[in-house]
Image (cartoon, rainbow over all chains, first blue to last red):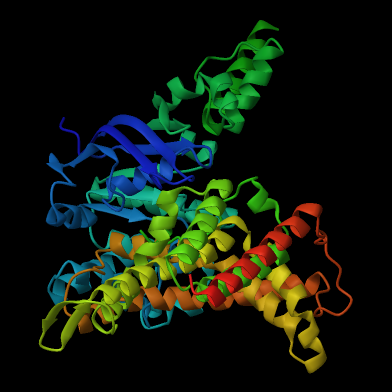
Length: 289
Length: 268
């Protein structure tokens, strides 16, 4: 399968030629495929946000190239602008970007910039609002009157309404209560299931990453330190800890049980796997007794 | 990018220029400006140039940073040069065409004026490059203290100033972030006619205002909950005190000013 995003030797240095010069990402090579759900993990300052902004053409690389659908997105101004509609980037705390008088108009901002017809815009706004569970009764309200969780959903809808091939979300659940987090994660999963688009999710929650992502990319000090299935990545728990990252709680408990002599299988990193493994263990013990 | 604006930016360092008391540096900058305006001819300008160059050298601020600071003012510098070039009388006439006359005196004036402006900017930049904004406003508050007698709200003014300075980087960062977020939704800030561009700023300004008010409100609450009630009886964690180097620096400043007055009287 052809990669939807292909990144080659991407390096970005901030403030070149000043005392504040800092290389945020070094020589990144990675590919993302259609329909993948990838969790991007890394410590604060590991370069993941800088990396994400290159995929949307918001930051130009110091060196290296980014191809979206085989097209070099920095080849021309038009190409850079086009990629904004192909790759939808939801920033951290996106509710702070809401500005229109009504929820409807705010969600319509992206599609309007795509110069679509009124009918097409209307269809997309309704569809996007549906994905994030924003009812039509809210369409005429001011986005500033709504709750934090609702604002965030509206901001996400504003990006989804552009129908991007790739949706990138930078910590979409930061600062929300557990119910709100769960709701947003479920919205994202539904969206991906229904549209088949590629989703890159930047997250600090290892439990979320373990639970929903098919592939994990770990950033450390501006480089990709690990790239693989959750199984592969979480089996390198000591390295993750050395990078200042956590392992999922279930993996930590499984490890603690192993150290106490319990014979658990290697791939235990979600709650379901842990319960199954422990149940199997008890059953085995029961049969033995 | 907006982040590249250097006006008033502080470059941390540990040179003698950095360590001087902010009050000393403020006084020295005033002395420097006064001395600069006393300069009349080659010799005095050369002296001022050497003094400035020495200070820049000692402060270890890179020449490139200073040149970048001069860049936004290039128009004023060129305008001054051109005006002086054409409107100075005296000396041998080299070119006389329409209303433009270029004389040897004009060339000299233009050159010296451009040097004066560049030194002026460099000198003041040296202050902001080597002094943290907080130290600067603290120094200013103490220097302006006598004005309290005249009921000038010195403390409030300096508090507002340090808060404004403190929030400039935050505001720039916020602007950058919102701009990126709107660009990600296809907003276009750089093309189109003037009216279109003005309208394109709306998605940037509205969120910026909203967050500024929110932040101001949060800051006020945070300050009040730490019992802030104005400058009355407030003490400082880092009290400023003059060291021997400050006395020496001020003496050097006085010597410079004296020297320049002497050269001014002699007309060299």
